[in-house]
Length: 115
Image 1: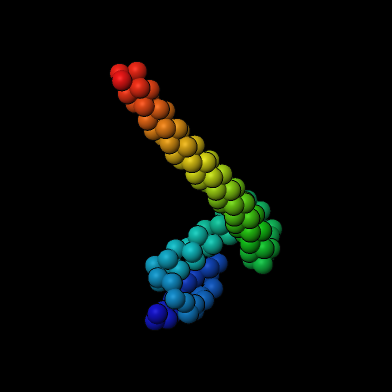
Image 2: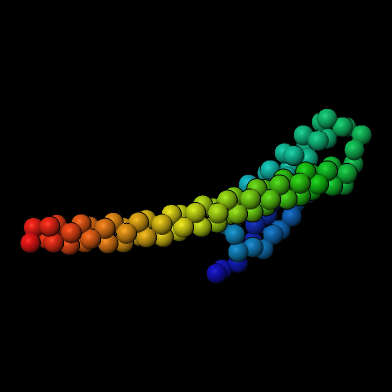
């Protein structure tokens, strides 16, 4: 895949990023980080740019960890549902075989009764 060189501006500083990602995506990330830093700065004007960046990083790390935990939880639930589904299919197969066996037995008994 071709590398893309993207320039983003965060907190007034320009950063050149070389990435495999879509340039629009990288620009959106930069805009998001810039917006988050400005938001934190407006709430706490005495913070330096580094302090704002650290707070944004902590917030995003928290969101990432929570999203990962949520995804792991969903994967575990899906795995349980798939196991339940497989177990139910096996039970259905067993029940069908039993129905077939009972239907044969009924047919045999009808034949014997009719003889």
